[in-house]
Figure 1 (cartoon, helix red, strand yellow):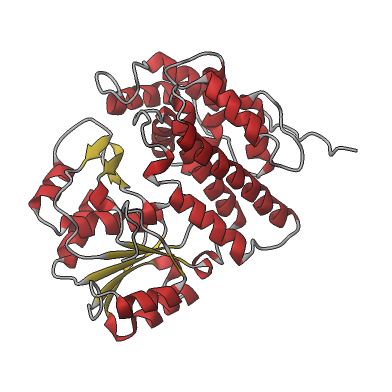
Figure 2: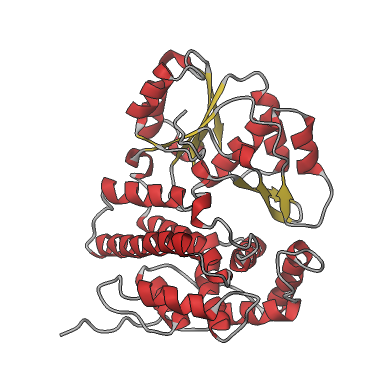
Length: 405
């Protein structure tokens, strides 16, 4: 498998590189592969290319649809017992199932951790055992970066939980533009926003300056904003995003999980993610709709001095860099500016949230992440309720400034 000295896995570019890996890597050469494929891409060109790269090594193909849950992951783990190599082809939900199930094959320790009763929304896996069967991830969406991450989302009756553990990270990832060729433009734009939000949340949520890490985040965030405008411009021109554009977005999305971006940061400096995920799960709406709705009030609260959510100084510094990356300069106010950015990219930020819903969701967030747990940093239900009520609007789309004469 391709790694660097710091165990940072480098993605393979395309199925040709996958075929070379399968021929040359002693750890997987000659192994029979079990392919997990999302029903949405079954028999597609990318599925055929992956099968071609595997050749006669493809021993079994399992087709999945839907996001799965704890029961389906444990059932898949039983199916994978004895597997020699697993290849996951699909979006973030399928890859998360593949990561969890292939690790659960290692033994009862993982299954016990996944099934232990708890109220916390976070499950932290032990450093060992390691995954006993190599996993190669081929993402068909952009944004989640699941193919490169050491986390996975898993649905429980109480809602989604975040499972974290270094052993979850796939042994290799294949980034192929053919895998996203039919992805709707709006989902590509949402993918850029997801990668951007993941990248800047620890930067804004932490109060300390870390110059090397800050510089990396700032550079990558500026690139993502430029890419988001390229997606928007292609949509307005009635064109598909180019292979090169989708490839760059996918690679940046995956790299946004790299530890060196945020080494030394407060691990709980991402409270906006927790709120957005619970909002998305409770209302059964897309995660990026929840993020887009939450971002303006979240940044407004930070800018107004709510230190538990983040640093106003660092938010202002970052936004001063990002607001000029588009064809027209966005408002200097971070909350108004990010609302204008989201609207410009055509991302929906309307959420069907009543006051009763908001109160219930605020209590749900506190139960899963606060009330003695460290993730919320002392935020209470009333604090979260004000964010949720503002996220619900109504707030009309922000109009872009006219082009400079």
